[in-house]
Amino acid sequence: APFFTHPSAVLLLRGAEERFTASGYDIVLYNIGRPEQVREQFRNVVDGRPDGVLVIAMPPPERELERLLAARVPIVVVDFRYPALSHTYIDNVAGGELATRHLIELGHRRIAFVGDPSVNPYGFDSSVDRCAGFRRAMARAGLEIPTAYIKEGPHARHVAHRLTAELLSLEDPPTAVVTASDTQALGVLDGANNLGVSVPHGLSVIGFDDIEAAAYVGLTTVRQPLALSGARGAELLLEAISAIQPLAAPIAEQLPLELIVRKSTAPPPK
Image 1 (cartoon, one colour):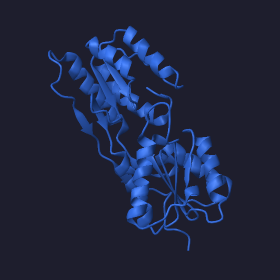
Image 2 (tube, rainbow, N blue to C red):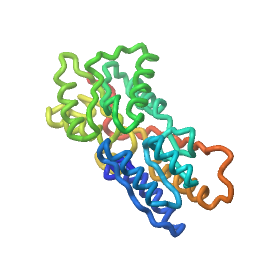
Image 3 (tube, helix red, strand yellow):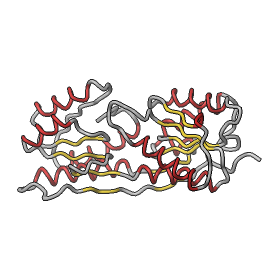
Image 4 (cartoon, helix red, strand yellow):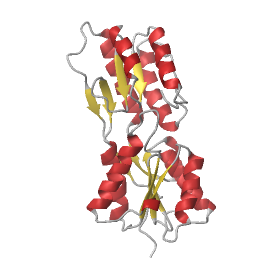
């Protein structure tokens, strides 16, 4: 699991852990916090001779994947589209579009996006796909996106805070911000608050995930069923562990998205 202290990863792990514990399995957690740990941790997994492997939100390295498959170790990927293996996933492009369309329907025309770097060493693609959905919704509404309205940075609240300050200091600042995650949305709220910009009357903000903190701060967001995703991944892995014969074909299970409207979005200022 990459960055398992991130709120979204915690929810995924919680869902998986409940299923594994109920079935009498112990969990060995391999956290990946730096790019150079990816191959190292997957090698540790191979050497540990596990009953099964649950990979969270990233593609497994090919060489280590081949070793696991050669050793007949069942593998399931959670929260990442990976057709070669059984996996759970969401449509991140549709999610980005859903978030953006909500703001457009409220009357916003100047909408920015805050997300992760489009090129990253882990193979993550959720932020890139959510940005693609943002671009698609804007194009369908005939709205332009100034280059300065797309902000990328490492996935952290304080980084989103800094990027928000840059957006709000523009000569023609946005009236709304779509973010690739609730963690980043919280940073946007911090940045707006620090500059005395009222949310939602001066700036609308929408997140993605619906982590526990989102409800406390009244954040409008796109909810993905994180705990369910982890639970379903665990169930697929348990089924594969107990199966006499390997599956004829991998199972791909798409989970639903839902727009949760709270207090952080409103029509743009007059």
